[in-house]
Image: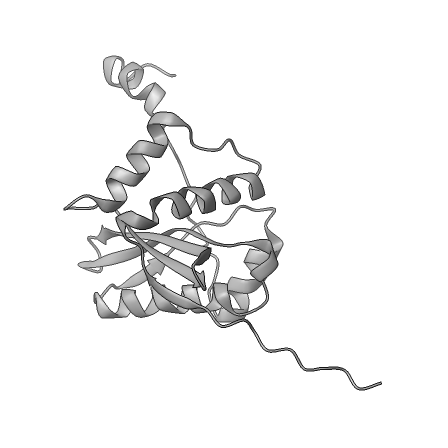
Length: 172
């Protein structure tokens, strides 16, 4: 029996606009579901859209579209490296809906971000991956990315800012 060759679905990549807000929120919800995290609600959804689409936006978004349907996205922004004396391109999220994975959408989104980092003259591109997400880890490794050694991620959440600032020497 002769197996029919499949071709990846055609899709378009472009920067998101304010009109894409509803689609962006749906994709963020899908990522939250995939990562077993709570979806952003009320005020967080409004801030996400405000920060993405205001005059001086806090981050940029690429959307992958199949026809008029948003099927994937990447959120990114710049940080700065004092040792390189160059910006660092930080990839906050990259996500593709399950039914479109394996068709080159994620790869194209990632390469678009890498090209944007090159265009912005960034000294590096960084992102984080959940330790259980072996498909993502394999994807990045195959592209030539390497895990950072000797660096551990740390975080202070907003709910603890005031407490730490009031008592900086006290253990929290």
